[in-house]
Length: 164
Image 1 (cartoon, helix red, strand yellow):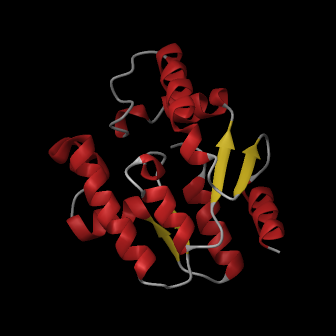
Image 2: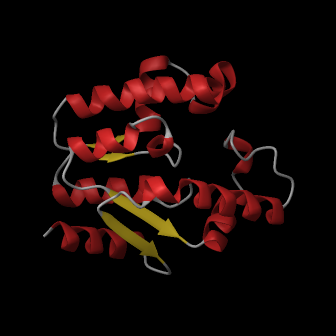
């Protein structure tokens, strides 16, 4: 959430001449409702079940693509193991907590996991807690990209270099 995966994913797909798929967009397309509304309607566990089914559908399709996953996706059930077994390249995009806080605060009302947070301090605490809780899953990615002040294209260039 807020790491730039959509921007980077689009640019990477263009550079690699592959289709770009955002799991949230795919969910929106197949269910006809926004991720926020799906989250509200089904609750977090129900949403994660829908997300898992959609992820499995995409990975089974065996179509080469650039696929972006939300921050909670790797942490539900065996999703991360399934992703690792389905593709040779997984990337964890890791900006600093302060960068995430800066990016997310202005758009928190559109993100169900953080819409209730009333200050930047509470958001920063939430982000730090979630990164800590999810680190075990994120660290399973076979490529880690620590984001500092790079432009999206510079990050894409790093990814392309890592892909060889």
